[in-house]
Amino acid sequence: MAYGFPMIGDLRQLPHEELERTNTCLKAMLAQRQKDMDFRKDIDKNVKSLQEERDLLARKLHSAEDAARERDKLVEFLKGQLDLCSEKAKTDHDKLVADKDDLNKRYLHIQCQQSQYQNEIRRKDADLKRLQDQVRCRIAELVAKNCGQVAEVQELHGADEDPPSDTGGEEGWHQQRN
Image (cartoon, rainbow, N blue to C red; front, side, top):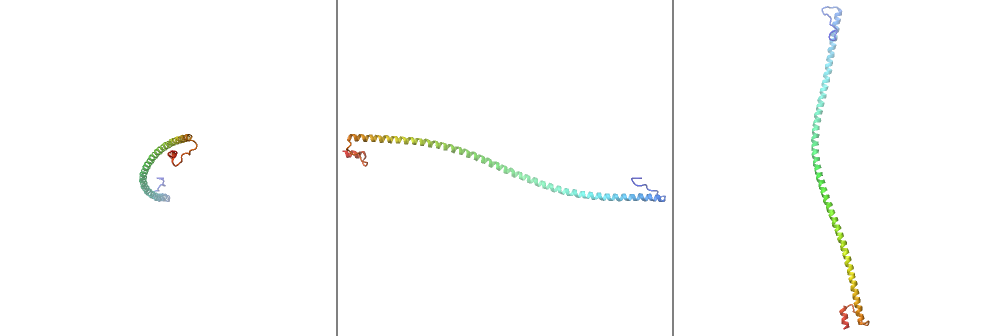
C-alpha cells in the first residue's frame, strides 16, 4: 500500500490479478479525487458563506460604529444642554436663596418694627390713661373747689339768694347782686 492506496499492479504483465489490482487502485484514486473535489466544493461554500457573513458583520459593525458616533454626538450635545440647564438652575437657586434671605431680613425688620410700634402703643396708652386719670382728678378737684366756693358764697350771702344762672355765669350773678 502506498499513501493509503492499494498497490498498483504490474502493467507489463497481463494476468488477470494484476489488472484487477490496477483497476482497484485507479478506482480508489478516482474516488479519492471525487472526495477531494467534493471537499473543496464544501470548503469553497463554507468560505463563501463565511466571507458573506464577514461582509454582513462588517456592514453591521460599520453601521453600529456610525450609530455610536451619532450617539456620542448626541451625548455631548445633551451634556452641554445639561450643563447649561444645571448652570441656569444653580443661578436661579442662588437667586431664590438670596431673595429668601432678603425676605427673611425684611420679615425680621418688620417684626422688630411691629414690636416697637406695639411697645410704643402700649406706652402711649399708658400715658393716655395716666393723663385721663390726671384730667379726671383735676376735673374732680375743680368741681370740688367750685362746689366749695359756691357753698361758701351761699353761706356768706345767706340761703335766700338765688344761685347764679347758667346764662350769665359768675359775672351775671355778680351783676344780679349789685
